[in-house]
Image (cartoon, rainbow, N blue to C red):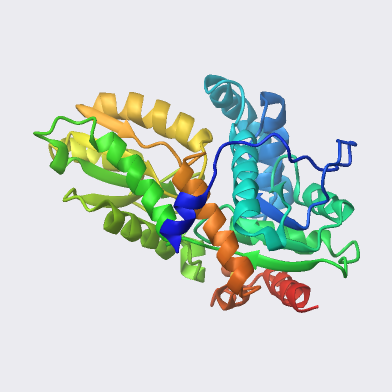
Length: 388
Ligand code: FES
């Protein structure tokens, strides 16, 4: 099935499909199926950095701070200048909106080919911390009059801090307005072991391994790196660590190489303990052990953003690795618009539309130690949403 889909897809961009927007764009065809692409988003310009940080620091699904309504804004203010400088160093802003729109257009074109019965398909971007926000996406989707809406997390591995936060934002949005009775909703909340996702990571890694001299190639250490998580969240029962590990295992199985590999964690903030080993510490430690050839694989991001373009490329590959005496380090590109990745997105959605379920039991089940009333209310909302 997967091979058939990969070869059937015409992944060249099309010019003919356009849709009605609230801004009055030309209408060709009314979309029948909306695909709502959830992600955190990133500031497009340095002017957006302050509000972006403020929204993150006051989101209790993402981070829990004492007296959050005061401490959150204080931290956001304090970090704004430093974070603006980082965005300046990668060209002035995050490319995540550009990539998500590219992926959305290619995904919906592929779906139009694969599933004429649910076409035309249209994508909607729903970011958590910068525009276009969750509410913008759902308002537009209602205005377009879609019959079917698939809420599709762009985090392949579920975490209550990421996908969970976006889901809670959707539940919040519909607290203040009526759920449209003529739209059938469903959710794709995770897809960490999809074979084509593993395949695209494997293909990206292979490209980088080929850059090493054949004498050292099989001994290059493959370091899979993902955003870390506070240990408090892990102890609550967040599924993210084992879902990331599942993607790593599926990728190594697809890659079929003898190289050693490890999963390490990046982007910790604040003084509390987070998942370790940290990516920069692992690079230094391997250098000390004499393992001086490394490949870094961002395994939980589907498109480039600050954690890959700045933290991995500038801070770790250029600075940390150089100072540690690493001889060669290569950073694998994120999936972006790789044809195999677009085929993965299309297959995930097509299988979902064909076979369901509308909502997974895994999503409906709260973490064993969850104490958040928001999570409880949100799970109940989604159960009602897909069963209305
Ligand atoms: Fe995981 Fe609430 S913290 S469901």
